[in-house]
Length: 140
Image (cartoon, rainbow, N blue to C red):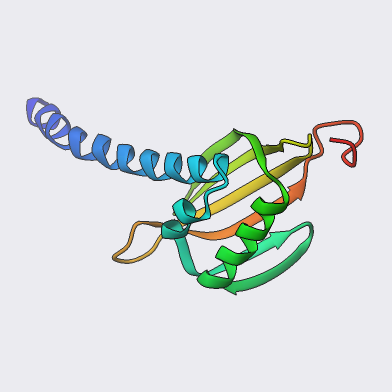
């Protein structure tokens, strides 16, 4: 039994540090969205990203995704971004939050992240929808 606890105590710091790395990467993605900084988001974009914007889905290259997100952020200047849900299911991590603009619009932004071989976590899918947390989504 002592051996078990010794092994646990020796391995726990490795597990905890990997959890910290994952948390930091997710925090950096959240901060990039919160600040509408595509340059901060781009290191976490996979070579191809599925972008589902307002029900229209397409697979884009990293460069195209950068342009799509730049256009979205230009048209929707940020006021705040609050994370509603964050977690993992298998190898996929997700971040779901409410993005509020300076004009009062609200959007639900979801990012689905997966670790690629030999790389850090990379965003595989970005989904942007009109928020449904108000009685009239057109008047956010």
